[in-house]
Amino acid sequence: MKKIKPILKDSYLAFIKNSAGAKSWRSLYASVGGRKEDILKGGEFSCAYFASSILLIFGLTKNVHATISGTIKDMKASGWREIEKPKPGAVLLWEKQKQGKGEPHFHLGFAINKNQAISNRWEHKCPIIHHITYGIKNKKPVRKIEKIFWHTKLDS
Image 1 (cartoon, one colour):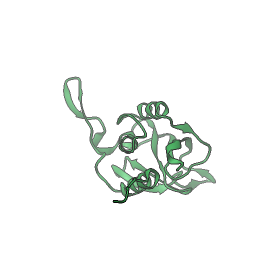
Image 2 (image 1 turned 120 degrees about the vertical axis):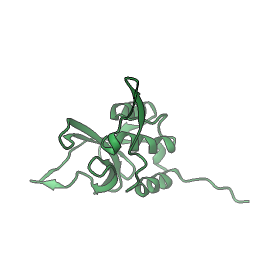
Image 3 (image 1 turned 60 degrees about the vertical axis):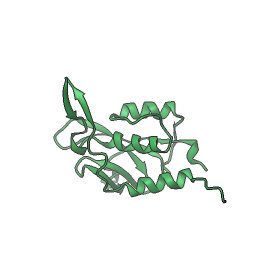
Image 4 (image 1 turned 30 degrees about the horizontal axis):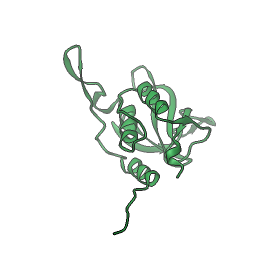
């Protein structure tokens, strides 16, 4: 019988790409002041939940998180480090911007290639593939990438 060994990076990248359009990360219920509440607001605030779920599935973090700060803290504790240029599978942190009429928020997702990323978009309420900086306007990125994270387990 042949030994089968899953290939982490290829499986991880395929899972990320295949998540486009999935509605799995829309809701996360918590008790807030004794009342049940969807703390992700039906997908409006699901980017950290989306990213941290995938990272946990592939053993690249220890927990699922509803917040970007919790996700990044877990990533750093799990061996993720900052790199200069995005590569497929890198976790991207975009600058704060307003979502609709709400407060400005950071945003988290994955690089797919040098020009594309995938993230759980508030207006779609599911992950979509988009330009890595949401396009260019007046010769500047529409949304600047603040940090790029990489795990050495993805090197092979």
